[in-house]
Length: 581
Ligand code: GLY
Image (tube, rainbow, N blue to C red; front, side):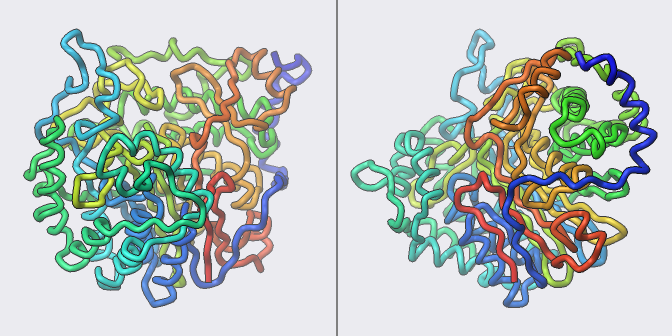
Protein backbone atom coordinates (compact mmCIF):
# COMPACT_ATOMS: atom_id res chain seq x y z
CA UNK A 1 0.00 0.00 0.00
CA UNK A 2 1.05 3.57 -0.55
CA UNK A 3 1.78 5.08 2.91
CA UNK A 4 -1.34 6.56 4.52
CA UNK A 5 0.21 10.01 4.68
CA UNK A 6 0.39 10.10 0.88
CA UNK A 7 -3.19 9.05 0.25
CA UNK A 8 -5.29 11.72 -1.34
CA UNK A 9 -2.33 13.25 -3.11
CA UNK A 10 -3.84 12.47 -6.53
CA UNK A 11 -6.80 14.82 -6.11
CA UNK A 12 -4.68 17.59 -4.65
CA UNK A 13 -2.06 17.29 -7.32
CA UNK A 14 -4.53 17.31 -10.18
CA UNK A 15 -5.54 20.77 -9.05
CA UNK A 16 -2.08 22.12 -8.41
CA UNK A 17 -0.13 20.68 -11.33
CA UNK A 18 -1.29 23.22 -13.85
CA UNK A 19 0.61 25.80 -11.84
CA UNK A 20 3.83 23.85 -11.77
CA UNK A 21 6.68 24.48 -14.19
CA UNK A 22 7.73 21.43 -16.19
CA UNK A 23 10.54 19.68 -14.34
CA UNK A 24 12.80 18.12 -16.96
CA UNK A 25 13.81 14.57 -16.09
CA UNK A 26 17.44 13.92 -16.89
CA UNK A 27 18.55 10.56 -18.14
CA UNK A 28 21.95 9.46 -19.33
CA UNK A 29 21.69 9.61 -23.12
CA UNK A 30 23.79 11.15 -25.84
CA UNK A 31 22.63 14.33 -27.57
CA UNK A 32 20.18 13.79 -30.41
CA UNK A 33 21.57 14.25 -33.93
CA UNK A 34 20.90 17.83 -35.02
CA UNK A 35 20.25 19.18 -38.50
CA UNK A 36 18.58 22.12 -40.21
CA UNK A 37 17.28 20.76 -43.53
CA UNK A 38 16.19 17.16 -43.14
CA UNK A 39 16.39 14.15 -40.83
CA UNK A 40 16.14 10.42 -41.45
CA UNK A 41 16.13 7.92 -38.57
CA UNK A 42 16.15 4.21 -39.39
CA UNK A 43 17.26 0.90 -37.89
CA UNK A 44 20.13 0.52 -40.40
CA UNK A 45 22.68 3.28 -40.98
CA UNK A 46 23.04 2.58 -44.72
CA UNK A 47 19.29 3.05 -45.18
CA UNK A 48 19.45 6.33 -43.22
CA UNK A 49 22.19 7.49 -45.62
CA UNK A 50 19.97 6.57 -48.58
CA UNK A 51 17.17 8.73 -47.16
CA UNK A 52 19.42 11.74 -46.68
CA UNK A 53 20.83 11.38 -50.21
CA UNK A 54 17.29 11.41 -51.63
CA UNK A 55 16.45 14.55 -49.62
CA UNK A 56 19.68 16.27 -50.74
CA UNK A 57 18.85 15.41 -54.33
CA UNK A 58 15.59 17.34 -54.01
CA UNK A 59 13.24 14.49 -53.14
CA UNK A 60 10.68 15.08 -50.42
CA UNK A 61 10.09 13.08 -47.23
CA UNK A 62 7.80 10.61 -49.06
CA UNK A 63 10.45 9.99 -51.74
CA UNK A 64 12.98 9.38 -48.96
CA UNK A 65 10.55 7.05 -47.18
CA UNK A 66 10.07 4.97 -50.33
CA UNK A 67 13.81 4.73 -51.04
CA UNK A 68 14.48 3.83 -47.39
CA UNK A 69 11.74 1.17 -47.48
CA UNK A 70 13.36 -0.53 -50.47
CA UNK A 71 16.87 -0.13 -49.01
CA UNK A 72 15.89 -1.70 -45.69
CA UNK A 73 14.52 -4.70 -47.62
CA UNK A 74 18.15 -5.34 -48.60
CA UNK A 75 20.27 -4.12 -45.68
CA UNK A 76 17.88 -5.01 -42.82
CA UNK A 77 16.40 -8.36 -43.89
CA UNK A 78 15.14 -9.24 -40.41
CA UNK A 79 12.23 -6.78 -40.82
CA UNK A 80 12.81 -4.54 -43.83
CA UNK A 81 10.97 -6.10 -46.72
CA UNK A 82 9.15 -6.27 -49.98
CA UNK A 83 7.56 -9.57 -48.91
CA UNK A 84 5.60 -8.07 -46.02
CA UNK A 85 3.54 -4.98 -45.38
CA UNK A 86 3.05 -1.92 -43.25
CA UNK A 87 1.70 1.54 -42.69
CA UNK A 88 2.77 5.06 -43.64
CA UNK A 89 1.53 8.14 -41.80
CA UNK A 90 2.13 11.35 -43.77
CA UNK A 91 1.86 14.97 -42.64
CA UNK A 92 2.30 17.33 -45.56
CA UNK A 93 3.76 20.81 -45.17
CA UNK A 94 0.25 22.32 -45.45
CA UNK A 95 -0.83 20.37 -42.36
CA UNK A 96 -2.88 17.73 -44.21
CA UNK A 97 -2.42 14.26 -42.75
CA UNK A 98 -3.10 10.93 -44.42
CA UNK A 99 -2.37 7.25 -43.92
CA UNK A 100 -1.51 4.45 -46.32
CA UNK A 101 -2.39 0.88 -45.33
CA UNK A 102 -0.24 -1.56 -47.28
CA UNK A 103 -0.50 -4.37 -44.77
CA UNK A 104 -0.90 -8.00 -45.81
CA UNK A 105 -4.28 -9.54 -46.60
CA UNK A 106 -5.38 -13.12 -45.95
CA UNK A 107 -5.34 -15.31 -49.08
CA UNK A 108 -8.76 -16.01 -50.59
CA UNK A 109 -8.49 -19.69 -49.65
CA UNK A 110 -7.98 -18.88 -45.97
CA UNK A 111 -10.54 -19.94 -43.37
CA UNK A 112 -11.32 -19.02 -39.79
CA UNK A 113 -10.09 -22.35 -38.45
CA UNK A 114 -7.16 -22.95 -40.78
CA UNK A 115 -4.67 -23.21 -37.91
CA UNK A 116 -6.75 -25.66 -35.83
CA UNK A 117 -6.61 -29.46 -35.88
CA UNK A 118 -9.71 -31.68 -35.95
CA UNK A 119 -10.00 -31.37 -32.17
CA UNK A 120 -10.10 -27.59 -32.46
CA UNK A 121 -6.61 -27.16 -31.01
CA UNK A 122 -4.00 -24.82 -32.48
CA UNK A 123 -1.44 -26.62 -34.69
CA UNK A 124 1.85 -25.36 -33.31
CA UNK A 125 3.87 -23.32 -35.79
CA UNK A 126 1.26 -23.41 -38.58
CA UNK A 127 0.62 -19.66 -38.41
CA UNK A 128 4.26 -18.70 -37.93
CA UNK A 129 6.45 -20.86 -40.20
CA UNK A 130 6.29 -21.85 -43.87
CA UNK A 131 3.93 -20.74 -46.63
CA UNK A 132 0.67 -21.27 -44.75
CA UNK A 133 1.73 -18.38 -42.48
CA UNK A 134 2.18 -15.94 -45.38
CA UNK A 135 -0.24 -13.07 -45.98
CA UNK A 136 -0.44 -11.42 -49.41
CA UNK A 137 2.40 -8.84 -49.30
CA UNK A 138 1.66 -5.12 -49.64
CA UNK A 139 4.99 -3.26 -49.41
CA UNK A 140 5.67 -2.85 -53.15
CA UNK A 141 2.17 -1.55 -53.86
CA UNK A 142 2.40 0.67 -50.77
CA UNK A 143 5.67 2.28 -51.80
CA UNK A 144 4.52 2.84 -55.36
CA UNK A 145 1.21 4.32 -54.22
CA UNK A 146 3.05 6.70 -51.87
CA UNK A 147 5.48 7.71 -54.60
CA UNK A 148 2.81 8.29 -57.23
CA UNK A 149 0.49 10.27 -54.95
CA UNK A 150 2.90 12.20 -52.76
CA UNK A 151 6.42 11.77 -54.10
CA UNK A 152 8.30 13.69 -56.75
CA UNK A 153 11.09 11.41 -57.99
CA UNK A 154 10.98 8.50 -60.42
CA UNK A 155 10.59 4.88 -59.33
CA UNK A 156 13.97 4.11 -60.90
CA UNK A 157 15.64 6.82 -58.78
CA UNK A 158 14.12 5.51 -55.57
CA UNK A 159 14.94 1.85 -56.22
CA UNK A 160 18.50 2.45 -57.42
CA UNK A 161 20.21 2.45 -53.99
CA UNK A 162 18.46 -0.80 -52.96
CA UNK A 163 19.40 -2.47 -56.23
CA UNK A 164 23.01 -1.34 -55.76
CA UNK A 165 23.19 -2.78 -52.21
CA UNK A 166 21.64 -6.05 -53.37
CA UNK A 167 23.83 -6.40 -56.47
CA UNK A 168 27.18 -5.19 -55.12
CA UNK A 169 26.53 -6.25 -51.55
CA UNK A 170 27.07 -4.39 -48.31
CA UNK A 171 29.58 -4.89 -45.54
CA UNK A 172 28.07 -6.47 -42.44
CA UNK A 173 28.59 -4.74 -39.11
CA UNK A 174 28.13 -6.12 -35.61
CA UNK A 175 24.36 -5.50 -35.54
CA UNK A 176 23.81 -7.03 -38.98
CA UNK A 177 25.72 -10.16 -37.99
CA UNK A 178 23.89 -10.46 -34.65
CA UNK A 179 20.55 -10.35 -36.42
CA UNK A 180 21.62 -12.96 -39.02
CA UNK A 181 22.88 -15.19 -36.19
CA UNK A 182 19.57 -14.74 -34.45
CA UNK A 183 17.68 -15.95 -37.52
CA UNK A 184 20.15 -18.67 -38.57
CA UNK A 185 18.17 -21.63 -37.25
CA UNK A 186 14.95 -20.50 -38.93
CA UNK A 187 16.71 -19.58 -42.19
CA UNK A 188 18.60 -22.88 -42.35
CA UNK A 189 15.28 -24.76 -42.76
CA UNK A 190 14.53 -23.20 -46.17
CA UNK A 191 16.99 -24.00 -48.96
CA UNK A 192 16.53 -20.71 -50.81
CA UNK A 193 16.75 -18.62 -47.63
CA UNK A 194 19.81 -20.52 -46.39
CA UNK A 195 21.56 -20.03 -49.75
CA UNK A 196 21.30 -16.25 -49.26
CA UNK A 197 21.69 -15.63 -45.55
CA UNK A 198 24.11 -18.40 -44.58
CA UNK A 199 27.49 -19.24 -46.04
CA UNK A 200 27.86 -22.32 -48.29
CA UNK A 201 29.18 -24.29 -45.29
CA UNK A 202 26.01 -23.40 -43.32
CA UNK A 203 27.88 -21.01 -41.01
CA UNK A 204 26.75 -17.45 -40.37
CA UNK A 205 28.53 -14.44 -41.84
CA UNK A 206 31.13 -12.56 -39.79
CA UNK A 207 31.62 -8.86 -39.19
CA UNK A 208 33.29 -7.23 -42.20
CA UNK A 209 32.07 -9.82 -44.70
CA UNK A 210 29.87 -8.75 -47.60
CA UNK A 211 26.28 -9.93 -48.13
CA UNK A 212 25.38 -10.01 -51.83
CA UNK A 213 21.78 -10.76 -52.93
CA UNK A 214 21.73 -11.11 -56.75
CA UNK A 215 18.24 -12.62 -56.97
CA UNK A 216 16.78 -9.84 -54.86
CA UNK A 217 18.64 -7.35 -57.09
CA UNK A 218 16.93 -8.91 -60.14
CA UNK A 219 13.49 -8.74 -58.47
CA UNK A 220 14.03 -5.10 -57.49
CA UNK A 221 15.28 -4.29 -61.00
CA UNK A 222 12.16 -5.74 -62.56
CA UNK A 223 9.97 -3.70 -60.16
CA UNK A 224 12.03 -0.65 -61.11
CA UNK A 225 11.45 -1.29 -64.83
CA UNK A 226 7.86 -2.54 -64.88
CA UNK A 227 6.37 -1.18 -61.65
CA UNK A 228 4.29 -3.17 -59.13
CA UNK A 229 2.88 -5.35 -61.93
CA UNK A 230 6.25 -7.11 -61.94
CA UNK A 231 5.50 -8.19 -58.39
CA UNK A 232 1.71 -8.66 -58.43
CA UNK A 233 1.01 -9.81 -61.97
CA UNK A 234 4.28 -11.13 -63.29
CA UNK A 235 7.03 -13.63 -62.63
CA UNK A 236 7.53 -12.74 -58.96
CA UNK A 237 3.92 -13.62 -58.03
CA UNK A 238 4.21 -16.78 -60.18
CA UNK A 239 7.35 -17.88 -58.34
CA UNK A 240 5.84 -17.25 -54.90
CA UNK A 241 2.59 -19.06 -55.76
CA UNK A 242 4.55 -22.02 -57.17
CA UNK A 243 6.71 -22.32 -54.05
CA UNK A 244 3.65 -21.97 -51.84
CA UNK A 245 1.72 -24.69 -53.67
CA UNK A 246 4.72 -27.02 -53.49
CA UNK A 247 4.87 -26.84 -49.69
CA UNK A 248 1.27 -26.77 -48.48
CA UNK A 249 0.57 -23.05 -48.84
CA UNK A 250 -2.65 -21.54 -50.19
CA UNK A 251 -1.44 -18.41 -52.01
CA UNK A 252 -3.00 -17.98 -55.47
CA UNK A 253 -2.08 -15.65 -58.35
CA UNK A 254 -5.48 -13.96 -57.95
CA UNK A 255 -4.53 -12.98 -54.37
CA UNK A 256 -1.67 -10.93 -55.81
CA UNK A 257 -3.64 -9.56 -58.76
CA UNK A 258 -6.37 -8.24 -56.47
CA UNK A 259 -4.12 -6.61 -53.87
CA UNK A 260 -4.89 -2.93 -53.30
CA UNK A 261 -3.63 -0.23 -50.92
CA UNK A 262 -6.12 1.62 -48.72
CA UNK A 263 -5.75 5.33 -48.07
CA UNK A 264 -7.35 6.06 -44.71
CA UNK A 265 -7.79 8.95 -42.32
CA UNK A 266 -5.33 8.77 -39.43
CA UNK A 267 -6.77 8.43 -35.93
CA UNK A 268 -6.40 11.75 -34.16
CA UNK A 269 -6.62 12.98 -30.58
CA UNK A 270 -5.41 15.85 -28.49
CA UNK A 271 -3.10 15.25 -25.52
CA UNK A 272 -2.40 18.27 -23.33
CA UNK A 273 -2.63 20.55 -26.38
CA UNK A 274 -0.61 18.32 -28.74
CA UNK A 275 -2.35 16.90 -31.83
CA UNK A 276 -1.61 13.21 -32.28
CA UNK A 277 -2.11 11.61 -35.73
CA UNK A 278 -1.54 7.87 -35.79
CA UNK A 279 -2.61 4.57 -37.32
CA UNK A 280 -6.34 3.74 -37.68
CA UNK A 281 -7.71 0.18 -37.95
CA UNK A 282 -6.55 -2.27 -39.25
CA UNK A 283 -4.02 -1.11 -36.71
CA UNK A 284 -4.99 -0.88 -33.11
CA UNK A 285 -2.02 1.44 -32.54
CA UNK A 286 -3.46 4.94 -32.93
CA UNK A 287 -6.76 4.12 -31.21
CA UNK A 288 -5.10 2.52 -28.20
CA UNK A 289 -2.40 5.20 -27.88
CA UNK A 290 -5.16 7.83 -27.88
CA UNK A 291 -7.26 5.86 -25.40
CA UNK A 292 -4.33 5.52 -22.98
CA UNK A 293 -3.28 9.17 -23.42
CA UNK A 294 -6.86 10.33 -22.78
CA UNK A 295 -6.91 8.37 -19.51
CA UNK A 296 -3.46 9.64 -18.49
CA UNK A 297 -4.40 13.25 -19.21
CA UNK A 298 -6.36 13.16 -15.95
CA UNK A 299 -3.22 12.45 -13.91
CA UNK A 300 -0.43 14.93 -13.17
CA UNK A 301 2.31 12.72 -14.59
CA UNK A 302 4.83 15.54 -14.77
CA UNK A 303 4.48 16.17 -11.04
CA UNK A 304 4.27 12.51 -10.06
CA UNK A 305 7.51 11.94 -11.93
CA UNK A 306 9.00 9.41 -14.35
CA UNK A 307 9.07 5.91 -12.88
CA UNK A 308 7.27 6.76 -9.62
CA UNK A 309 4.85 4.17 -8.25
CA UNK A 310 1.90 6.51 -8.81
CA UNK A 311 2.86 7.25 -12.43
CA UNK A 312 3.47 3.57 -13.20
CA UNK A 313 0.21 2.57 -11.50
CA UNK A 314 -1.78 5.08 -13.60
CA UNK A 315 -0.01 3.92 -16.79
CA UNK A 316 -0.57 0.24 -16.06
CA UNK A 317 -4.25 0.69 -15.28
CA UNK A 318 -4.79 2.78 -18.42
CA UNK A 319 -2.98 0.10 -20.46
CA UNK A 320 -4.99 -2.71 -18.83
CA UNK A 321 -8.30 -1.14 -19.83
CA UNK A 322 -7.16 -0.10 -23.31
CA UNK A 323 -5.71 -3.53 -24.25
CA UNK A 324 -9.03 -5.22 -23.40
CA UNK A 325 -10.59 -2.97 -26.00
CA UNK A 326 -7.76 -3.63 -28.42
CA UNK A 327 -8.04 -7.37 -28.18
CA UNK A 328 -11.81 -7.66 -28.20
CA UNK A 329 -13.22 -4.82 -30.28
CA UNK A 330 -10.88 -4.00 -33.16
CA UNK A 331 -10.28 -5.52 -36.57
CA UNK A 332 -10.12 -4.84 -40.29
CA UNK A 333 -12.51 -1.91 -40.98
CA UNK A 334 -13.82 -3.64 -44.13
CA UNK A 335 -15.06 -6.50 -41.96
CA UNK A 336 -15.95 -5.12 -38.51
CA UNK A 337 -17.47 -1.95 -37.12
CA UNK A 338 -14.63 -0.44 -35.08
CA UNK A 339 -15.78 1.71 -32.15
CA UNK A 340 -13.02 4.28 -32.82
CA UNK A 341 -15.07 7.30 -31.78
CA UNK A 342 -16.05 5.77 -28.47
CA UNK A 343 -12.57 4.48 -27.62
CA UNK A 344 -10.93 7.84 -28.37
CA UNK A 345 -13.57 9.90 -26.59
CA UNK A 346 -12.46 11.90 -23.51
CA UNK A 347 -15.73 10.97 -21.76
CA UNK A 348 -14.90 7.27 -22.18
CA UNK A 349 -11.45 7.94 -20.70
CA UNK A 350 -13.14 9.59 -17.72
CA UNK A 351 -15.29 6.47 -17.23
CA UNK A 352 -12.10 4.38 -17.19
CA UNK A 353 -10.44 6.72 -14.69
CA UNK A 354 -13.45 6.37 -12.42
CA UNK A 355 -12.89 2.60 -12.39
CA UNK A 356 -9.21 2.93 -11.46
CA UNK A 357 -8.51 2.60 -7.75
CA UNK A 358 -5.57 4.92 -7.03
CA UNK A 359 -4.25 2.57 -4.35
CA UNK A 360 -4.94 -0.88 -5.75
CA UNK A 361 -4.11 -2.81 -8.92
CA UNK A 362 -7.04 -3.81 -11.11
CA UNK A 363 -7.71 -7.47 -11.92
CA UNK A 364 -7.57 -8.28 -15.64
CA UNK A 365 -9.85 -11.32 -15.41
CA UNK A 366 -12.64 -9.08 -14.13
CA UNK A 367 -12.49 -7.15 -17.41
CA UNK A 368 -12.90 -10.25 -19.59
CA UNK A 369 -15.32 -9.47 -22.44
CA UNK A 370 -18.00 -12.06 -23.28
CA UNK A 371 -17.08 -14.75 -25.83
CA UNK A 372 -13.55 -14.65 -25.85
CA UNK A 373 -1.40 -11.99 -28.21
CA UNK A 374 2.49 -10.12 -32.60
CA UNK A 375 6.19 -10.00 -33.49
CA UNK A 376 9.01 -7.91 -32.25
CA UNK A 377 10.81 -7.80 -35.55
CA UNK A 378 9.09 -5.01 -37.22
CA UNK A 379 10.94 -1.82 -38.10
CA UNK A 380 10.07 1.85 -37.85
CA UNK A 381 11.61 4.92 -39.51
CA UNK A 382 10.94 8.63 -39.19
CA UNK A 383 11.70 11.33 -41.77
CA UNK A 384 11.24 15.12 -42.12
CA UNK A 385 12.32 17.24 -45.07
CA UNK A 386 13.33 20.86 -45.57
CA UNK A 387 9.75 21.90 -46.38
CA UNK A 388 8.41 20.39 -43.16
CA UNK A 389 6.77 17.31 -44.74
CA UNK A 390 6.91 14.50 -42.20
CA UNK A 391 6.60 10.74 -42.74
CA UNK A 392 6.42 7.88 -40.22
CA UNK A 393 6.62 4.32 -41.55
CA UNK A 394 6.33 1.07 -39.64
CA UNK A 395 6.51 -2.09 -41.75
CA UNK A 396 7.21 -5.69 -41.05
CA UNK A 397 7.58 -9.36 -41.90
CA UNK A 398 6.03 -10.00 -38.45
CA UNK A 399 8.50 -12.44 -36.88
CA UNK A 400 12.21 -11.95 -37.37
CA UNK A 401 12.82 -12.94 -41.05
CA UNK A 402 9.05 -13.57 -41.30
CA UNK A 403 8.01 -17.09 -42.18
CA UNK A 404 11.67 -17.88 -42.92
CA UNK A 405 10.94 -18.74 -46.55
CA UNK A 406 12.20 -17.30 -49.85
CA UNK A 407 10.51 -18.35 -53.08
CA UNK A 408 13.33 -19.81 -55.22
CA UNK A 409 14.59 -17.32 -57.78
CA UNK A 410 13.11 -14.21 -56.11
CA UNK A 411 15.47 -13.48 -53.22
CA UNK A 412 12.39 -12.18 -51.34
CA UNK A 413 11.77 -13.16 -47.72
CA UNK A 414 8.08 -13.69 -46.99
CA UNK A 415 6.09 -12.63 -43.95
CA UNK A 416 4.28 -14.69 -41.30
CA UNK A 417 1.67 -12.01 -40.70
CA UNK A 418 -1.21 -14.52 -40.57
CA UNK A 419 -0.20 -15.09 -36.93
CA UNK A 420 -1.51 -11.61 -36.08
CA UNK A 421 -5.05 -12.93 -36.62
CA UNK A 422 -6.96 -14.71 -33.86
CA UNK A 423 -6.22 -18.38 -34.59
CA UNK A 424 -8.55 -19.37 -31.77
CA UNK A 425 -10.44 -16.89 -29.60
CA UNK A 426 -9.00 -16.79 -26.09
CA UNK A 427 -5.67 -18.45 -26.99
CA UNK A 428 -2.53 -16.33 -26.93
CA UNK A 429 -0.60 -15.74 -30.16
CA UNK A 430 3.18 -15.51 -30.60
CA UNK A 431 3.24 -12.39 -28.44
CA UNK A 432 0.83 -13.48 -25.78
CA UNK A 433 -2.05 -11.39 -27.13
CA UNK A 434 -5.39 -12.97 -26.31
CA UNK A 435 -7.76 -11.78 -29.01
CA UNK A 436 -11.37 -12.22 -30.09
CA UNK A 437 -13.77 -12.64 -33.00
CA UNK A 438 -13.30 -9.13 -34.43
CA UNK A 439 -9.86 -10.27 -35.56
CA UNK A 440 -10.88 -13.73 -36.81
CA UNK A 441 -9.39 -14.95 -40.11
CA UNK A 442 -11.40 -14.35 -43.32
CA UNK A 443 -10.43 -14.24 -47.01
CA UNK A 444 -8.95 -10.86 -48.05
CA UNK A 445 -9.08 -9.63 -44.45
CA UNK A 446 -6.14 -7.81 -42.84
CA UNK A 447 -4.94 -8.99 -39.43
CA UNK A 448 -5.11 -6.50 -36.59
CA UNK A 449 -1.81 -4.74 -36.03
CA UNK A 450 -0.18 -2.75 -33.25
CA UNK A 451 2.03 -0.72 -35.58
CA UNK A 452 1.80 2.94 -34.67
CA UNK A 453 3.61 5.32 -37.03
CA UNK A 454 2.75 8.60 -35.32
CA UNK A 455 3.14 12.30 -36.13
CA UNK A 456 2.42 14.92 -33.47
CA UNK A 457 1.86 18.61 -34.14
CA UNK A 458 1.53 21.66 -31.95
CA UNK A 459 0.01 24.97 -32.98
CA UNK A 460 -0.29 23.76 -36.56
CA UNK A 461 3.38 22.82 -36.87
CA UNK A 462 5.07 19.41 -36.83
CA UNK A 463 6.38 18.63 -33.35
CA UNK A 464 7.39 14.97 -33.20
CA UNK A 465 7.65 11.93 -35.49
CA UNK A 466 7.77 8.63 -33.62
CA UNK A 467 7.17 4.88 -33.83
CA UNK A 468 8.76 1.56 -32.99
CA UNK A 469 8.82 -2.18 -33.58
CA UNK A 470 8.03 -4.44 -30.62
CA UNK A 471 4.94 -6.54 -31.42
CA UNK A 472 2.20 -5.94 -28.86
CA UNK A 473 4.57 -3.49 -27.12
CA UNK A 474 4.73 -1.12 -30.11
CA UNK A 475 1.83 0.78 -28.60
CA UNK A 476 3.33 1.26 -25.14
CA UNK A 477 6.83 1.97 -26.50
CA UNK A 478 5.48 4.74 -28.72
CA UNK A 479 3.25 6.01 -25.92
CA UNK A 480 6.10 6.14 -23.41
CA UNK A 481 8.33 8.12 -25.81
CA UNK A 482 5.48 10.63 -26.15
CA UNK A 483 4.87 11.09 -22.43
CA UNK A 484 8.59 11.14 -21.69
CA UNK A 485 8.88 14.19 -23.95
CA UNK A 486 5.62 15.94 -23.11
CA UNK A 487 5.23 15.11 -19.41
CA UNK A 488 8.74 14.37 -18.22
CA UNK A 489 10.63 16.96 -20.26
CA UNK A 490 13.15 14.47 -21.65
CA UNK A 491 15.08 15.07 -24.85
CA UNK A 492 13.96 12.91 -27.77
CA UNK A 493 17.00 10.66 -27.27
CA UNK A 494 16.40 10.33 -23.52
CA UNK A 495 12.70 9.69 -24.12
CA UNK A 496 13.46 6.82 -26.49
CA UNK A 497 16.29 5.33 -24.43
CA UNK A 498 14.53 5.48 -21.06
CA UNK A 499 13.72 2.02 -19.61
CA UNK A 500 10.18 0.89 -20.31
CA UNK A 501 7.22 -0.83 -18.67
CA UNK A 502 4.40 -2.70 -20.41
CA UNK A 503 1.01 -4.19 -19.56
CA UNK A 504 -1.34 -5.73 -22.15
CA UNK A 505 -4.31 -6.84 -20.03
CA UNK A 506 -3.43 -10.55 -20.33
CA UNK A 507 -1.24 -11.95 -19.00
CA UNK A 508 -1.99 -9.83 -15.92
CA UNK A 509 1.63 -8.80 -15.39
CA UNK A 510 3.58 -5.57 -15.45
CA UNK A 511 6.68 -6.20 -17.54
CA UNK A 512 9.61 -3.92 -16.81
CA UNK A 513 12.90 -3.52 -18.60
CA UNK A 514 15.92 -4.06 -16.35
CA UNK A 515 16.51 -0.91 -14.21
CA UNK A 516 13.17 0.66 -15.16
CA UNK A 517 12.02 0.81 -11.54
CA UNK A 518 13.83 1.20 -8.24
CA UNK A 519 13.49 -1.40 -5.48
CA UNK A 520 11.29 0.88 -3.38
CA UNK A 521 9.02 1.63 -6.34
CA UNK A 522 8.75 -2.08 -7.00
CA UNK A 523 7.84 -2.65 -3.37
CA UNK A 524 5.09 -0.02 -3.53
CA UNK A 525 3.68 -1.48 -6.75
CA UNK A 526 3.73 -5.00 -5.34
CA UNK A 527 1.93 -3.81 -2.22
CA UNK A 528 -0.73 -2.32 -4.48
CA UNK A 529 -1.25 -5.78 -5.99
CA UNK A 530 0.78 -5.53 -9.20
CA UNK A 531 2.67 -8.58 -10.41
CA UNK A 532 5.84 -6.93 -11.74
CA UNK A 533 8.30 -9.00 -13.76
CA UNK A 534 11.69 -7.99 -15.09
CA UNK A 535 11.90 -8.87 -18.77
CA UNK A 536 15.39 -8.74 -20.22
CA UNK A 537 14.57 -10.56 -23.45
CA UNK A 538 15.83 -9.08 -26.68
CA UNK A 539 14.59 -7.42 -28.90
CA UNK A 540 11.08 -7.35 -27.47
CA UNK A 541 11.43 -3.81 -26.13
CA UNK A 542 11.70 -2.44 -29.66
CA UNK A 543 13.97 0.09 -31.30
CA UNK A 544 12.10 3.36 -31.57
CA UNK A 545 13.07 6.04 -34.09
CA UNK A 546 12.06 9.64 -33.42
CA UNK A 547 12.46 13.24 -34.48
CA UNK A 548 11.66 16.33 -32.40
CA UNK A 549 11.22 19.63 -34.20
CA UNK A 550 12.58 22.94 -32.87
CA UNK A 551 14.77 21.66 -30.04
CA UNK A 552 16.02 18.53 -28.36
CA UNK A 553 13.41 18.80 -25.58
CA UNK A 554 10.42 20.91 -24.57
CA UNK A 555 12.51 23.37 -22.56
CA UNK A 556 14.73 24.09 -25.58
CA UNK A 557 11.73 24.40 -27.88
CA UNK A 558 10.06 26.85 -25.50
CA UNK A 559 13.25 28.92 -25.10
CA UNK A 560 13.81 28.97 -28.89
CA UNK A 561 17.18 28.60 -30.55
CA UNK A 562 17.25 24.79 -30.59
CA UNK A 563 18.21 22.87 -33.70
CA UNK A 564 15.39 22.62 -36.24
CA UNK A 565 15.49 18.81 -36.43
CA UNK A 566 16.62 16.56 -33.58
CA UNK A 567 16.85 12.88 -34.52
CA UNK A 568 17.19 9.92 -32.18
CA UNK A 569 17.67 6.25 -32.93
CA UNK A 570 17.05 3.97 -29.98
CA UNK A 571 20.25 2.96 -28.22
CA UNK A 572 18.79 -0.57 -28.18
CA UNK A 573 19.31 -0.71 -31.97
CA UNK A 574 22.59 -2.25 -33.04
CA UNK A 575 22.92 -0.85 -36.58
CA UNK A 576 20.55 2.11 -36.68
CA UNK A 577 21.35 5.78 -37.09
CA UNK A 578 19.82 9.21 -37.19
CA UNK A 579 21.28 11.15 -40.10
CA UNK A 580 20.58 14.75 -41.00
CA UNK A 581 21.91 17.49 -43.23
N1 GLY B 1 3.19 -7.80 -36.81
C1 GLY B 1 3.28 -6.72 -35.91
C2 GLY B 1 2.10 -5.81 -35.96
O1 GLY B 1 1.58 -5.60 -37.01
O2 GLY B 1 1.67 -5.29 -34.98
